[in-house]
Amino acid sequence: MTNPLRYTWQLYTGKFEKMFVLMLTTTLPLLMLHSFTTNYIYTITPSLDPVYSFADIYYALLTILFYLFAQIPYIRFVYNEYKGNEHSLRNAVYHFLVNGFTVFLFAVIVSILSAIGFMFFAIPGLILLTLVFPIPYISIFDEKPVWKAFKEGIRIGKKNFLKIFLIIVISGTIEGVIGLFVVAQVFNITDSFAAQILTQMTLNLLVFPFVIMYITSCVLKWREELDVLEINEEEATTS
Image 1: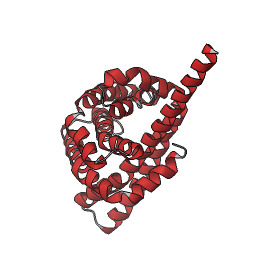
Image 2 (image 1 turned 90 degrees about the horizontal axis):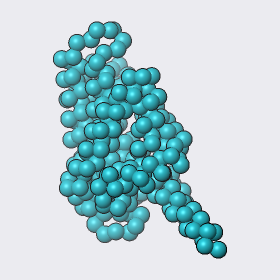
Image 3 (image 1 turned 120 degrees about the vertical axis):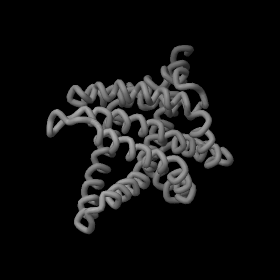
Image 4 (image 1 turned 180 degrees about the horizontal axis):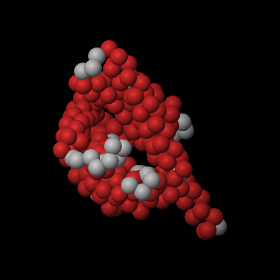
């Protein structure tokens, strides 16, 4: 992997019909469930402060949970395409439906800890999320449980901490700004809440896969660099 961004763009545009299938079959149902759940939580959760409420904590927890879990098919699809595996789309959906349970458990734990961290000025939550972010990628690459990918994932997370941190923050900020702008334009046309939700979902459907595919390409590159570094160190030691 020499240029993750170029590879991601070529794969996203060249295989968009397959991306579209993944969007409709995996991401869209999760987005709909996330939207329904978070809106219901905001409805039933009392707000003790006009700026901040406990519903915000639940929203952060569910968002991180769905974000981590929804990555699975895109991670596997990029890996399959990069390695030249056959039936990459079918295999990606299979991993999402059958082998995603351990990633889901991992996402539950990380989302809870990160949400607690976000309560303290957001930084602790972002630090934790950044450190553990590569773990499910290694798990999906190697088709092994998350806890068996923990050590290598943390190593990659530590070595590329700043890069992962910036990708998460910048991509989240850009998507948020674009989302606010688009929703504002929709609001000028109609005050329909359903139209605003559909617009936001469409934006997420288009942006989320690209971001995850880019991070997957980066993790593939970082892993290759780490393997080369370890081989060079072993050769230097033996010589």
